[in-house]
Length: 237
Ligand SMILES: Nc1nc2c(ncn2[C@@H]2O[C@H](COP(=O)(O)OP(=O)(O)OP(=O)(O)O)[C@@H](O)[C@H]2O)c(=O)[nH]1
Ligand SMILES: [Mg+2]
Image (cartoon, rainbow, N blue to C red; front, top):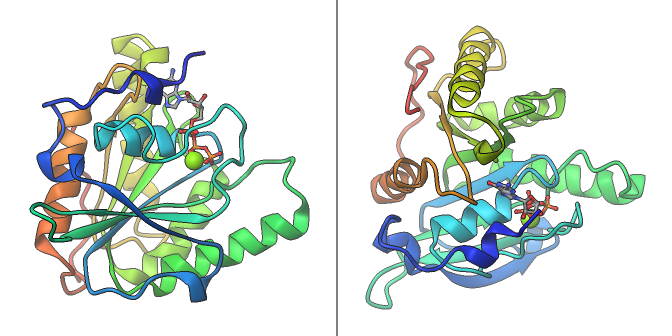
């Protein structure tokens, strides 16, 4: 399997803002996270789901986030700034993946605490991008993470990635199944600020334009007051 990040050249089909992404810093624990007052969007998902590859392709850069065949590669929260004309306008955060069996238990528990703390307490967050392998759908650990995040009262967007592994019909079927699952379970998990899901591939760039536009919109709108509205299911296929 090729590394899609190696083929992702800068491209006009992603947003100009995201293309300006630059490495900011890396944090192994809460105290190392930079303080800033910019809107921040976090990328989370199971180990090896394709988070770093998605960040690379969304930012039109080959090696911004470190993508790897070795699961558990991203062991810190890596942060990137985006902004035009030298002015930082937002931050993207690449989180360590969860669910990788071969990580020692103590390490796993440390990451888990860090991720949970980050999701619940990071004031700069404006939205969460959850990366899910379209072939597997949402798993128990994804739902656990969503429950940690729910009190933040912020929107969640799912990138159903590695869609290049499925036929178009299978992609649409899987996307519908995941949207149905979100509709059934989001409110029970406490997610009241909106959930949406779309088909995506870092290899073939399926869904790139829609995903980049949504993230850019989140960054542009900044931190909104938590929405008291009923859950709403997007259908950006
Ligand atoms: N075919 C295909 N492979 C992909 C896609 N996205 C990622 N991959 C591959 O999946 C593997 C993991 O990708 P990463 O982006 O490193 O995944 P990650 O979620 O950041 O992984 P950790 O940081 O270890 O949690 C790599 O071998 C990638 O080349 C995709 O859209 N299609
Ligand atoms: Mg990674």
